[in-house]
Length: 267
Image (cartoon, rainbow, N blue to C red; front, side):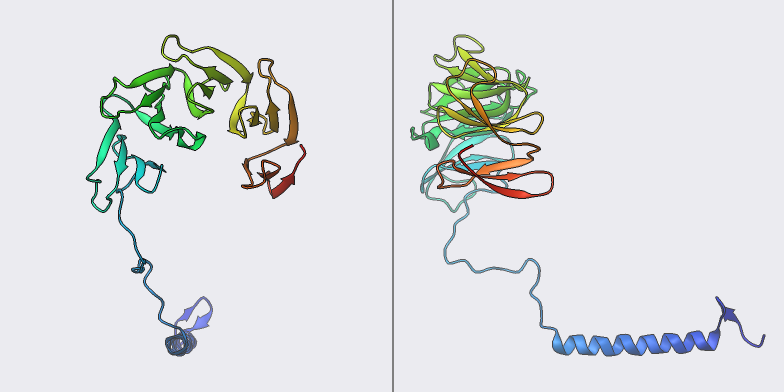
């Protein structure tokens, strides 16, 4: 042959096709440059009417009021910060618990139970006392003299009903209602609610949503003491759930294997 072939196509034919493709790409680039608007940079600066920085890289936080924020920082120190904000770290803050004495994995101020913002549940990581749960009370700063140990086998999911009653899931997936006085025995006086619990959500002091290990979602009711307690089945194969706000727990969003449902009581 007088010329080299490439995959059965002659070299002049290949060059002609490359030239045609190049002209097409060039024409397309001209069209895009004319008709495509200039897009903003991905991390472009936004304009905010008013804002102040409170913290840098917090692991968790909880707003207690317009002037108080609880902050678990990236060093696992737990702080109560007060206004004025704008300097990082905040200039007016008090250490509640330090990573030097605790491996803090989560915390929960009791202000959402209509108590004061002077009490906080602190959950330690599992490497410290196998997951100890403690109640801290103000004045903060005297660490750990203001700490009362509640349980030493909590699994990281707890919910205070009041400062004398706390729902605790232990590291064996058992759900308990634990009652004061705290600090004298471990665990404290308690009543078992259920077993094989994946997670739970409180609706009131007498009603609890419980997702079992098989994915079944239950509405469980007091009186507690028998396992399981009086309960109504809501759904099966539940991956996640959330009570719809403002419905008095009569509507629940439920995600199963493929679909998100809005489910209506009575259950």
